[in-house]
Length: 215
Image 1 (cartoon, one colour):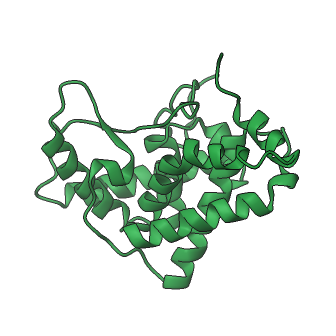
Image 2: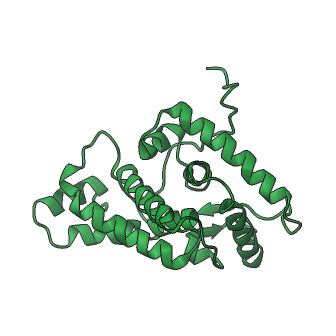
């Protein structure tokens, strides 16, 4: 028997099932924490933001509508929790990362030590990118959300997401280029997900918002 969908678990929670919401938390907590960590750059802050996100999701459970997937709805809550916390602090605070913290997985053939080094390099550069661009890059490049899904998370038009991703990638590339330890042959990073969290949609392609691809 297959596991129940996120939407089925949320419906069960609303019907009074005492274990259903805990299953949702267990299913998504790693990716939500990783999302907050990428936005905030600090373990303690990410833990606080992730906890706030799940508390908010529990409080708002009855407001969920099936116009979007549960994961998209939850990402929106987590992004809001992380950005609210960043706003309260004023800026990202960096801390050392490891693959488990960031929800990273090593691509086949990749060396764990190189992935850790690349994770730290990318996170340091990400922290120097403007928040609105950083969030868009994290969603579309690390979490592999299509532009349409990221637009739902951020509650902005698709064109705005494309513009933010383009500018975020440009800013990130500039920061990485200024880092003498950043090398192009390091293994690529991807975000690891738990059961039921992988997106089947294709990843966003690099796009210049002023020169969109045909079609």
